[in-house]
Image (cartoon, chains in turn orange, purple):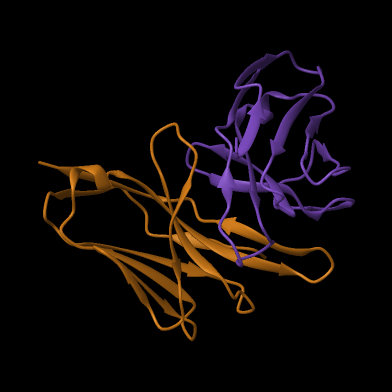
Amino acid sequence: RKEVEQDPGPFNVPEGATVAFNCTYSNSASQSFFWYRQDCRKEPKLLMSVYSSGNEDGRFTAQLNRASQYISLLIRDSKLSDSATYLCVVDYVNNQAGTALIFGKGTTLSVSS
Amino acid sequence: NAGVTQTPKFQVLKTGQSMTLQCAQDMNHEYMSWYRQDPGMGLRLIHYSVGAGITDQGEVPNGYNVSRSTTEDFPLRLLSAAPSQTSVYFCASSYSGGGNSPLHFGNGTRLTVT
């Protein structure tokens, strides 16, 4: 079964706060992991890929734990503009027809001043 | 480049009507896919294609057909619309399937079935 589970939201934090989101996936064969961001009534956009050794992009840090099958996203020094829904995305391998990307339901972040 | 273009942006159908949601990309991407997004459900994969002539079902394929006769186009067909198909539909493409390259999304089609 293809499943990607995320923290239930919403997360309401003040500007400057640090916030972390977790995501678990069920398919141990998954190889690729991403975080996407979606603003209200807009299409999702890639925030960052998640690499095995962990990776950082400015205020954003992504971690992968293959043994426990979870992914995390840490946002430091939150800005008002970080308010959005964050989607955890994992690949699902179908050997007959290639792979597909499966999305979690998303976690909503609201940053207030 | 226009990227991923979806048409129409909005559509209202009556139960039982048929229609085709169009999706075209001009980035020479091999991989294309259709998702639907409903409140509280996130994005769910309907169908995907790893290249011209190859399609496969996603998580929620029932009620939808697809074909991929060219690299550029990946239309989604609703043969007999049902109220349960009221949703926002996103088409997405990437250079290669799976996780090798990020998905580029269209702006979405908001479909209401009455």
